[in-house]
Length: 448
Image 1 (cartoon, one colour):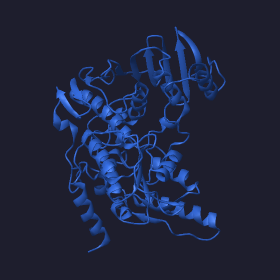
Image 2 (cartoon, helix red, strand yellow):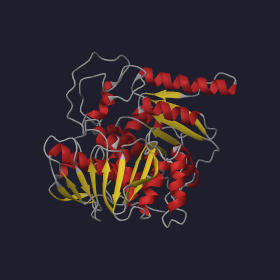
Image 3 (cartoon, helix red, strand yellow):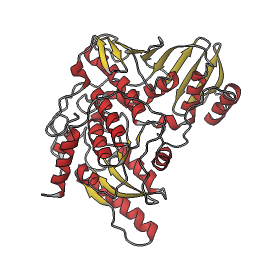
Image 4 (cartoon, rainbow, N blue to C red):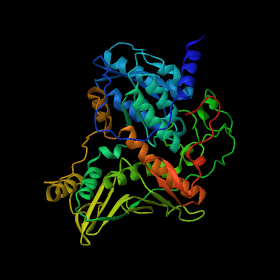
C-alpha cells in the first residue's frame, strides 16, 4: 500500500467521525504543547494569489521554515516550490532543494515534521482540509470565509476543540487599528445605544453557469472540484498558470458564496465584534424579496438590525452618533458632526489614519471599561498563539460564527426566505429548511 493510499484511508476514517456541537468561544488557552523545535515548520495548501502573499510573509520570518507546498495545478505548485528553494538557497549561500511539492494535501498532512499549515484553497475545500489538518496534529491558519456552509462551520469548530489545536481565521481586519478603535468606541457606548448596523459589499453568488474551456495541462481538475460537483473546466474558476488576481470561483454557489461570504466575512465579522456577539449570532433573518441583491437583514437578540446595503464599509448607528470604518478609513460622528475622521483626501480632520484613531482613543477611550483583543499583525498573532497555546484574535469559533451569519444572509437571498434562527443550537426555529445547512458531497469527500 502506498503512502498516498494510507493518507486517504486515514482521511476517510477520520472525516466521518466529526459530530455537530455548539460553537463555544472559550477564554482559556488550549493545553497542547508548542512545537519542541525552535523553528515552526510550515506547509502551504493552495498556492494561488492569497497564499502567494502568505508565503512571502512567512518566508521573511526567522521563527518559521517552509518545508512543503501543495496545489492541484502543476505550474503553481512548482512555481511555489522554486520560490521557497530559491529563497533559502540565497539565504544560506548554498543550494537548497528541501521544499517538497504535493498534488494531494493528504500527503503533506501525513508528514510528522510539519507543525502547522496555511490553507488558502477555494472555499469548498476549507473545512475538509482544516479538519484533516487538526486531526493530523497540525495547527492551522485558514483563510476566510472559514467554511462553505453552516454544517461545516459547526463540524470544524468541534474538530479543532477535540484535537486541542490552534486555528486562526484569516479575518485580518481584527488586527487593524481602525477596526479595533471603531469597535471599542461602540462597545463603550460613545455613540449611545446602538440602533442599527450597515455592512457594504457586493452581490450574492448565482448558480454556476459557465461554459467549458479546453483543459489546462498539469491541472488535476477532478481534485480541484473535490467535494463540489464535477463541472466542466473553465479558466475563470482556476486560471491558467501563475496569476495575480482573485479568481471568480467565489461567484458560484457550488464553490463559493459570492461577495456575501467574501467581503461579508470581513465586514459582518467586524459588525459582530462591535456588537459583542462573537459567541452567538442573529435570531432572525429577513429576505429583501425575490431577485434582490441588497437589503437582506440579520436581527440580533438585543434588537439591533444589520442590513446589507451600499455604504462606507461597516457603519454603526447609535442614539448619539455614528461610527464608520473600512480599510484605511475611520470616522466618528457625534450629534451630526464629524469629530475624528480620516475617510477621504478632501475632507479629513486628521492628516493620517493613525492620528484619527489616536485622537478618538485619547478623547473617548482613555478610561474605557471594555478593551478588545489587541493584535498588531494577524500572522504574528497566530505564531504567538502557537507558542503560548492561547486562543488567537480570530479563533475558529469566531470565524465560524461570522461565516454562519454570512451563510444565513445568503440563504435569505437564494431562497427568498425569512426565518427564525437559534444561534446556540445552530438550527432553524421556523421558516427554514435543514437541508440548506449542508451540501451534497461528491465522492469520498464528506464532513460527517
